Image 1 (cartoon, helix red, strand yellow):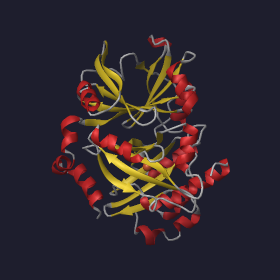
Image 2 (tube, rainbow, N blue to C red):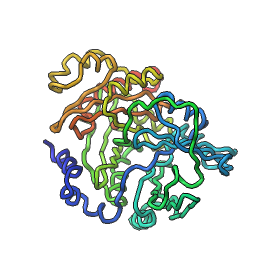
Image 3 (cartoon, rainbow, N blue to C red):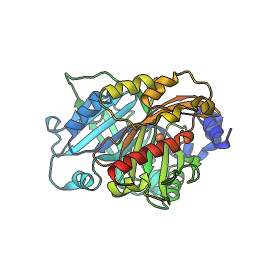
Amino acid sequence: MSAEIKDLKNLQNTEYGLKKLFPEAEDFLPLLGTDYVELYVGNAKQSAHFYKTAFGFQSEAYAGLETGVTDRVSYVLKQGKIRLVLTTTLEKGGEINAHIDKHGDGVKVVALWVDDATKAWEETTKRGAKSYLQPTTVEDENGTIVKSGIHTYGETVHVFIERKNYHGIFLPGYKKWESHYNPKPVGLKFIDHMVGNVGWDEMNKWCEFYGKVMGFAQIISFDDKDISTDYTALMSKVMSNGNGRIKFPINEPAEGKKKSQIEEYLDFYNGAGVQHVAVATDDIVATVSEMRNRGVEFLYVPENYYEDLIERVGEIDEDVDILKQHGILIDRDDEGYLLQLFTKPVVDRPTMFFEIIQRKGAQSFGKGNFKALFEAIEREQENRGTL
Ligand code: FE2
């Protein structure tokens, strides 16, 4: 067992491991989990319809003209513990239009749930974070929220949400979203990890940011020897907070014979940003087949991937033919195995996508699948003429 994976296991399973690994993080920035992920999109109403229909998200909350918000519209969707906020503007010009113009639809806010948003802001800005939002109290008849925020890579921000004195549906300004159209959930439970793509030679800078400013620790690293095909290469490090609930892998491009998928992302996103959101399920076959039926497009995995599968990963509970039918990838580490599959980009530009992941013991990130995965992405790049 590699030391890094063992440490990750410790930190998730024992109080001792957690404190030993990240004493600092425990002290200055305790994070309870991901609060929400907010995308700035060109058309929030239609995006919300897509995430309900195709991904099985449920109508949760709404803010807009009807709730007294005059400059923007936000739809909040929920499935399991995952909250997705889709926001667009009602005005010309301004910050949201500028974001959409530059990046296309993409993640603006990765909000983190904290017990004390004022302290979270003070501790992180003191350690060098650039402030996005000073601690601000907002209230309505359902109580009080304190929020604050800092900048991270690109134009992405972290907002800290303190909601212990709030019992409304989402945040002040939002009302319950009642809809007659409620497609069933597809079994998505929580966010397993969220990956950021950053520019050339910027991976270490941002890993240091998560280490120094937010008290995260690096749990795994991959270099271009691990992650390269005949054409493309990248490097990646995985940063985790103290309780292991927040995991942010950071990718940067590496020199290859052709343009890597990370470069393609950076070109179309015009800078660093969130590349994919990995969401966990307890039954990947059921989740993926339902999503396929609802129109989600997944990366194609060639049949030969499955030829020596059992030799590579050992015995698994699932029927290989069914995994093959859905193109589900499998990888094993010392703790167990995991099953994963990646959607094609869910937006117009070849930028953001989702990963569906089911962990059966394994705490790693599917290193054994990187080659197959990247070859699948390269086939897509070839089709787009961007390889
Ligand atoms: Fe991932």
